[in-house]
Image (cartoon, rainbow, N blue to C red; front, side, top):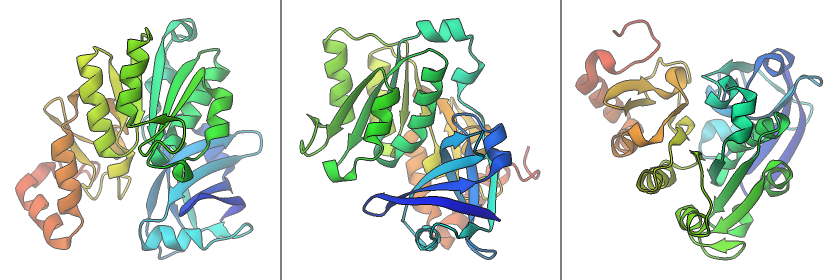
Length: 292
């Protein structure tokens, strides 16, 4: 059992939990995720690791209540335990593999949208620990929906906050802030965008025009988290990939976002899942061992 040591409601329907999971904390790296179950017969929910403390043996997760599974999670209190807390899963950030000196010289931009701020934070924190720096754009619909602003400010080289309604920070979409920074003379070697699919799509359309290589995290489309269900099937560079076992990070300029978003909509119904299985045949599943 995995005890909840801390629970905090960051904003309406978005919660942070610090969980006792020493084996996961010992082995995880930025970019990876866990699968949790609140109870024995509860839904399995993939969640990106927001932070970790190897000494304390803890993992921090952030989630938004969007269905029955996350609603049950939100009812848990400090002192309660998760039945399952499996990980680390997925491929770590590409930054982990890079030479530290080369990493320090890189001009890196992160774009975080909404709850996507949670998986951005550990990567920026890890970079700071390596002596590297990254600029961060945090976007939200309104000021009230912003999360982890102080935490991000402590680890980012420069933090730019923007709200769609102009209620706080810069006004407008994150793409406008990217344009503004480039117009001001900022240059970037790589961009990492994590957030809603539609946000990542438009960030990638812009960064392609600006010739900035861009990495996206497709954790929003994961369901099963092990490649068994086929929910996170996506086409990247014309090849079939699965976010949970091949990612979650991919070359954003190679991702077919329109196809991925259509699949998300269709996958929500039993009839839709059956239709996708029929249409996609042997490529419908990822890590189940039944596909070529």
